[in-house]
Image (cartoon, rainbow, N blue to C red):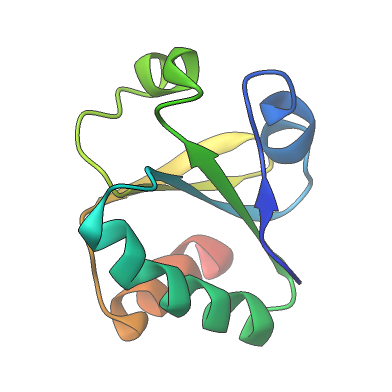
Length: 107
């Protein structure tokens, strides 16, 4: 599944109303660590077909950043059936992401 971009107006539909697991990547185009994690998440989106991957640009969607207390980027929310189950801050390895995602899926 390809990564979907969400904003203030589409976040409810793309993330909160989705049945299943969604990984939300809060990023900015100027953020170095965000660029490091981008190919990792793209690879995981191809591998983990049952998980939806959504990107939110913090500069363009400050309302969402405030609502979800995003103070550092990248920050990733793992949402299951509309509920935030976990938050990961900073760049991590593919294995770390897989472990956290699988914990929520199997949880």
